[in-house]
Amino acid sequence: MKIIHAVSEMFPFLKTGGLADVAGALCKSLSRFGHDVSIFLPGYRKIIESPEFAKAKLKVILQVELGDEYLRGELYALPLGKRQTMYVIRRDEFFDRSSPYGSANRDYDDNDRRFIWYCKAIVEGMRLLELKADVFHCHDWQTGLAPLFLRVAEEEYGTSLALKTFFSIHNMAFQGLFPSNSFRYTNLPSEFNELDGIEFYEQISLIKGGIFFSDKIITVSPNYAKEILTPEFGCGMEGALKTRSSDLIGIANGIDTEVWDPNTDDRLPANYSLSNLEGKRTCRSHLIEKLGLAETENPIYGIVCRLTEQKGLDILLSQMSFFSKQDCRLVVLGLGDPKFERALKRWARTRPDKIAVCTVLDETMSHLVEAGSDYCLMPSIFEPCGLNQMYSQRYGTPPLASNVGGLHDTIDDFRENPETGTGLLFEPSEPHFKNALEESLSIFRSEGEYQRMQANGMKRDFSWSNAAKEYEALYSDSI
Image 1 (cartoon, rainbow, N blue to C red):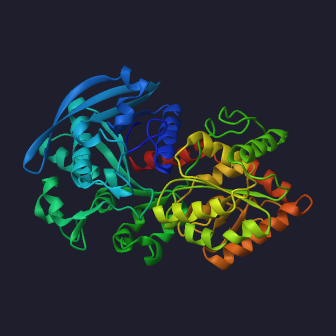
Image 2: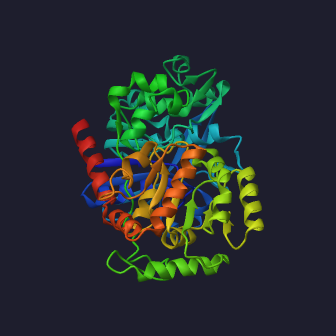
């Protein structure tokens, strides 16, 4: 098949979260299955300045309508290997910035213009390059209008650009909401700015465009596909989703096992495997030394995430005394809401021997935290899929996680299934999290129980080859 993916970030070129990991690994897997895969990305500063971009070739100049003006862009092609090409859409006014979506925890004021233009530029690029696709797959609100613009362009130019369109929801909480007057940038007829279009409570919603105007809607775990049909998790969009429920599919993400493999990971001070865990002990010692923590025979708990309410930071903060009273250790890695950064750093200053907080985006450090910790914490309020719980199981670091979304789909609760369990699941609340922490300490001190849970997790196969086969089957069945 000829498959086109449209995304706003992709590992290893630019990453702010799991979307980048998913895009990079899924596209690589599909190309290895023998499909021709093209990926569209914005020409962010980090991409343009990367050594790889020096090999890119300018393919076409774009003139893209945005409201009452036409804005120029450039489309570059960069081969990523056999059967995989990345197309970079460059307009420095929009994308030559230090971060992709905003700065200082505030979205850019022109994100409506930036990403409406980007959606149009993708479609115009496909048309000019005559990239006839079997599958056109868009991801999250940043590309939410592209399926609609594609069908409009097909009608306008009397051509076919894609047989079927797909739209992935990676996080329902981010919807691309903008003032109603932003609709003028779409140049669409006014009927699209109504309830059955992209209008959303006197605003416009770019994610609603993907929901209403794609042939199939995908989200990143089967459980999350059920959850977002409810008011608790639908973020106000559950009504729109229910009208498309027959076209909504949940496919759990995988992980890139070439990047995340403790046996070969070159970011670690020592490698290890299920048959020889000596390297994991080395990673643990290195993590303690690097962060200046005191040695302990009790567990090290690691959390790698955006520091936001969604990730359960309030729940974590409610139990900080646990790490002092029980002589455990806590390592936090991530950036986010300043109030959470400040609160965590206060604890770290109070107990620097027991609590370490690193407010950075550091890929190497994230590997070390996964490998050097004894438990991975994920007290999320909601979690569409989550990747860290899969990384941690592969790295022999059992997760303690909320029983929501993809965490439910990818963790086998050890208390319910001691022969196969890979972690502990709990309801996302302070008392349930407290109980899970206490149970994890008991398991860690029990002869053989922790080792069995650890081994069960390391035996699981979360590779993208399995998840990509589900995508391949869905594409094939749909066209």
